[in-house]
Length: 439
Image 1 (tube, helix red, strand yellow):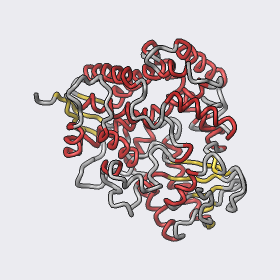
Image 2: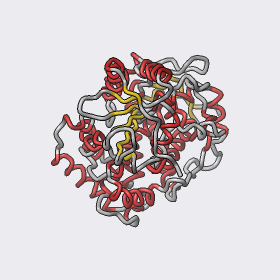
Image 3: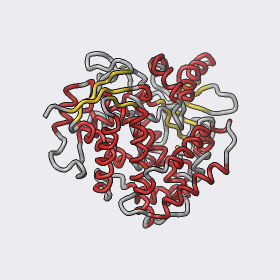
Image 4: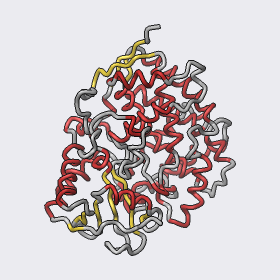
C-alpha cells in the first residue's frame, strides 16, 4: 500500500518565501498558466527565467535535506515539494488525500470548464474519469480511431508544407495545428471553425487571472453552444463519435473544452521537438529510420519520435506547476493545504547527468521510469488520460513533416548538441527554413 505521508516540512523564512514568489511563481504566472502570452514568453526566453528558479530550489533542497518547504503565505497554507520521492508520494495520493482539484485550479478553469474532470470532487470525478478514459483510451499506443486521425494528420501537414513554402513560422504552424485538432476532436466540418477556438482563447486568457477576473457567463455560453453543435453531429472518425457512445453524464462539453486546452500545449511541444530534431543531426537520422516507407496516412507507433516528444516536455514542461490540495488530515498542515511541484526544477535538476541535454533514450531504457520526479504528463491516478493520444498525434505530425523535408532553425536561441540547452524556450518566435530532402 502506498504511503500518503510526505516528509515533514520545514518553515521557510520570509526572505526565502519572497524569493520563491519572485523567482518561481511570478515568472510562471506572467507567462500565462492557462493561455500562454507570446510577449511574456518572448521576454522569459531572453531572460531564461527558469534557470535562476531551478538554482534557487536546488539551494533550498540542499539546505533542508529535501524536506518540503512551508511558505509564509498570509491566510493560506502552501508547501513546496523539494524531493523526487515526495513527488511520487504526492501524485500517487490522488484524489484523496491529495486532490487535483485545488482552489487555484477551480478559480482558473471554472472560467471555461466548471464541471471539468480536473476540478471535480472525488465523487463526481469517478464517472467523469471513466467517460474520459473511454473516449481517449489511455494505455493504447494506437487509438481505435488512429487510422482516420493519421489520414487527417497526413492531409493537414501536406497543406501546411504547401502553404509554408521555404519558411515555417509558429503562426503558420499554429493555424494548421488548430485545423487538425478541430478535425480530430469534432470532425471535418469543424476544421475551419476558428470562431470556436477563438472564443475558447478569450475564456482562457480570462482564466489566467483566476479569481481576479470576473467570469463571463454569456461568452462561455456562446462557446458551449457552438461546441455542442459540433458534438451533436458526432461525425464518424472523430472523438465526437466516440463521445456519443461513452455514457456522458451531461458534462461532455466541459471535458472536451479541457481536451482542446490540452491540445494547445501539445502543439507547443511539437514545435519545440521539431527544433530539437532540426539541431541534433544524430537524433534526426535515427528518427528518420523509423519512418515507414508505406502510406504516410497509415498509423504507426513511432517509438523513438514519441521519446523525442517526451524529452521535449521534460526539457520545457508545459505544466510548470502541478498543484494538489489536501482533503483530510495528513499530519503536516491543515486540510486545504496547497502542495506545489515545480516541474522544471525536477526535470532540469543538476544532479541528473542529462539535465540540460537532449536525451530521448531515457524514455526507452527505463531511466525516466525509475525517476518519480520526471512527470511529463503528471503521474498516479490523476495522470493525463490523453497522454497516449497526444503522443500519437505529435509524433505522427513530426513524421509527416520530416519524411520529405529538412528544417533549419533560423531564429530563436542557439540549440546544439555540444552546449547546454536553453532553460526556457519561447516557441512563439521560433522559425525554420524548409527545403525538400534530396531524392
